[in-house]
Image (cartoon, rainbow, N blue to C red; front, side, top):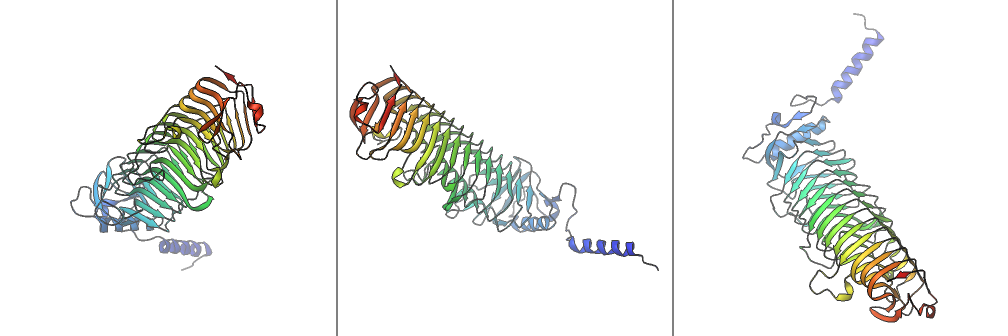
Length: 448
């Protein structure tokens, strides 16, 4: 038999392909592998962990989606290897926790996809910090169109991951709905979160550094603070130590503390969010941060509106512009009157421009607190129905402030008043007396 060069080459390639392609225990359709062909059956009364794990491993090895039919599957402590793709029928394919610290988990596994699945924790307590879905060091992760219900800890916990969680509904997580630590540019968009015990979305870094996550277009409601505290819990969105994070166009309603809280989070952008019924400050940028943009947000109902604070801890440099803030006042038992009812509070290297504030019983705008005031400008704002229109610190050590071109209507205690901490020290500086304070420029404000 004569074997020419072409036949030899084709034969070699065919042999190599046969070696490289894993043998399949079940036929592969154009949609993927059917889990039923591994003995995994919806509605079975027994725990299907072992069968489902075998199906997951086989499908991942073949780089094929594993298809799960509608119905309930009882399982727990499932491990996702690299390439695992689980696909269900949205709202109909339900995995219920039976055992283990998580329902589904992965570690050092990449290119994982979870689509159209319901994960039901049944309220079973999880270990501290654990997620019903728990992934560590996963690159190119995709969780989409899923539901996570009744997690007895965190619903989804991601550590050192990149990828996206989109279009997913998370209800009644005992701890946090989405807890993400040491992320690498996560995309968290178009999710619906309701009834979280301690937090909606947490994006944290274990030390101050770049994160770059995008948190956008989510709806977050009824965030509690079951573990108590003074602000570490009870926030719909909390960014901690994570720099360069964008929080955009989220709809947030009812939180035990804050709608959006940036803590030591430099270069955070908080833009275009709609926030209502918050029991503390609606939007915070606090402690050791440098750089915050807080713009075009709507706040309706909170103890205080926007706070850019903690210059004493290095918190500085912000713009606060184009926000609508209204209906403020004490909401928690025991809140001191001077700690509530403030529209916007700022301290250092900050411009407050073009905001509209209404019904702020303590002050529309508070510039500085004691000596913590440096290089701020307050201009072009509208303040209506407030205690003080604008408070500005004149305490010993307080720095420069320029207050100009604001319209202040119905400020019953004075339009612009100098303060030493919470104590008024001047008359209405919009009318007279500003010359006594060379560090202040007060001009062209209109009051009535």
